[in-house]
Amino acid sequence: MGVTVALIERFRDRLPVSDATPVVSLGEGSTPLLRAPRLSERLGVDLWLKWEASNPTGSYKDRGMTVAVSKALEEGARAVICASTGNTSASAAAYAARAGLPAVVLVAEGAARGKLIQARALGARVLAVRGSFDQALETARRLSDRGDHVLVNSLNPNRVEGQKTAVFEIVEELGGEPDAFVLPYGGGGNTTAYVKALSELGSGAAVHSVEAADRPRTLASAIRIEQPAHGRSVEASGAHVHAVSDEDIVAAWLELARLEGLFCEPSSAAGLAFLRGTDELRGTRVVVTITGHGLKDPGAADFHAPPPLVVDPDPDAIARAAERDLSE
Ligand SMILES: *Cc1c(COP(=O)(O)O)cnc(C)c1O
Image 1 (cartoon, protein in one colour):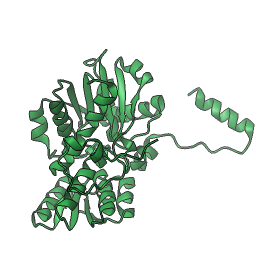
Image 2 (cartoon, helix red, strand yellow; image 1 turned 30 degrees about the horizontal axis):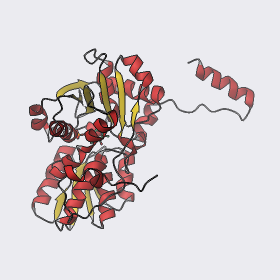
Image 3 (cartoon, helix red, strand yellow; image 1 turned 90 degrees about the horizontal axis):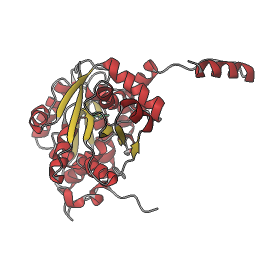
Image 4 (cartoon, helix red, strand yellow; image 1 turned 60 degrees about the horizontal axis):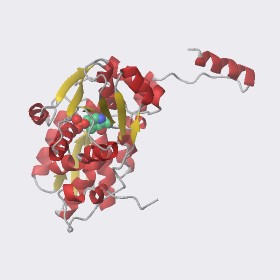
């Protein structure tokens, strides 16, 4: 057992940091890469899952945030600001607290409850903007242009740099590149980061980026973004973009939980929803990134997972109820 290694230390040579950069870390990255035997069999692919929910605030956003906040501190920032569907705000709040900087978080209406609670508990100034995510982001940009607040959305290039490291870890752990990477597509920052990492590695692996068919209204709040900020770069990147319905996202989400024991938030299942509906990747080695934890969005789980059955404290009644459940 060693001391936890900060992501910036592990990948120092491939990140925009120097000895002068104060490393703000919560022990992010180095997340599990899990084989998925049951889903592999069902989907006809050699499936691996990159479990990004085990990052410090429960989503992959921490990979970019450690770099963005470290650089902000190095450059003398007085505060950080972001607009967020939720996970960026939780991550910004945590890393800003760790750095001793104030964080301002603009959230869109309808952000998932678990994420907002995180940002509030971590001491961020949380402001609920009357409007969509896109409007909140535009406002955060305008405020950061005035100079006092460093924008830590994925438009901040340091975020994208940090997020590349998921690909480096995967390739290191597999001992080579998979045939394809599959991940959800909201604003497209993570897709941009994956494509950049692969190009730095000289890899020709495919990237499949999966968006919600109904972007403005999907239940998957982390990808409920009408105008992806990185849309142009995703288009130019050579990544394959696919759209999935909410119904398919929910089915994939429940299947992942029940077959492999991983409880993620709905957006994280978008990649699996795509895989379930295609033969394109049959027989190949595929890594699907599971971007965020299920506890982030208790409302979605509450709605889609069966409620507990109420029973008497009696062994016979419990055995009967459990049996009925097993045969369902
Ligand atoms: C941010 C986020 C996404 C979307 O990633 P983009 O970089 O915006 O495309 C997907 N899932 C989760 C859990 C997220 O936090």
